[in-house]
Image (tube, rainbow, N blue to C red; front, side, top):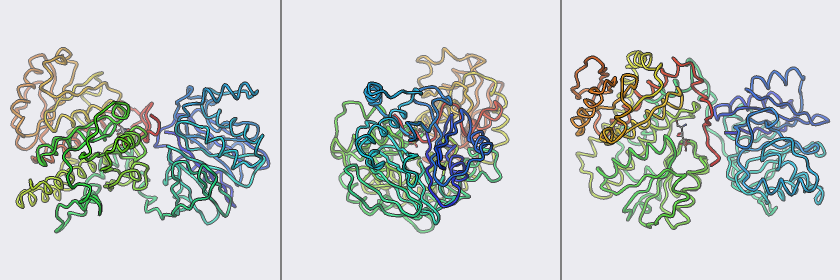
Length: 608
Ligand code: AGP
């Protein structure tokens, strides 16, 4: 989603702004722009990539000590130069991430006062609103504060004014924004990756915070104008972690990083470590005590991780579990139960719907909350009572891969911890599960070695327009994840079904042009699944079966079998999904899509 960079420094900040935008490209965007003050306000915008904006800046010979920059992911108004940020109101420029829900009423009242709007965006209303406040308060900081107090919805903003050239103002509510404390200046950005070029010292702004940035100082204020101290953190994010290195795409890099990502995430059980609620924080024994059910809230791929966890939690820990799409849960009249552990799962930790669902559950009195997240200082992590930080490392590709498998590792640990608390984990079982978890990095490596065969499959069906994914039990969510990956990056229409549902409708779609991908490990449901596959074959459907060491399914005409090297028991979903990730990646390569930045999608979905 939109990305913001703000800089004020002793040196020319234009290269910093542009490099910051490049680092935010992965969030997804359709246009880019910047504004700098160098005597007068100069704005450049491009309805394309950051590289095009950089050419414009070069041609203009742009140089300045203060500026704001933005990548826009269209919400209000089509992607175009006219709608690209910054938006200007008489020498005052604003960049914005988020959605202002009451912008229409603000716009009407500003129009009545003579303000003329040039774009279709909600952001322009912010620019004019701040400008209108300057009529009653000459202080830019106060004008921004008064204006933001009137905004409903989510925002992170950066503001510059020609009349006040020695400071930039930023503010946030609902959308992420952090400050960077540099040696030669002050910075702000939507995420740390944009600022590693200048500093590792960062300050995470809280909801409602406003900050004034000067070359050598900053101050943070609350919405009522009172000052507040926010802790300075030293980011441990390495600049290399966000570089592509030897890989062609971030998605490819991230798929191949999974052995390491899983090893890091499960470090606490390496060697002699055992299953313990303390993996979820010092307060976990107290929070888990008396938990009778689990409610998982998440979106997209993270929701699929929750669906896998439901099978684990109910079968291994004996705890009833419900999994809900966060955007549905937050608006549904539900019946809260105090002995529920609410688990929110999010790679980014900034997903607006998941954050709102978490707040909603807490407001309903369900305060035993756990965030499974890959970003330690994210809004979701800060909101939850307990946190488990997956150690996937930064995930840049829009299609989530290593974040998903590390979420599954975290949820496996949660399952085993709750099973242990409930007296359902014998010492022998614990030892077996621990050894299976420790074996995961090696097992994943072996799956990655299947890439040539999976690539050959991708070549065969990349020309198809539709695909059906089938799975049963804990592999049904893996089929769902496989279908999501395929449509997300290759634009092939894909649907997933619990294989037993096939004959209740989707079988009507099956013919020779509908490839059917089946997740078929040698588990207790394999024989049932085989019958479902016969139903497909009998209708001329071509089968691509991801079997494993123990699944005896003969290869025949129209039935292609790939044997995963081992049978992985409870953890089988972690391994099978990696094969499906490779399949989607290679199908997208054949189709020539923009793998890391698929059309219309954003990495960090900070609007609802
Ligand atoms: C995954 O490939 C998707 N890009 C998307 O479904 C994602 O998982 C979803 O938007 C949730 O994001 P989160 O994990 O950051 O909350």
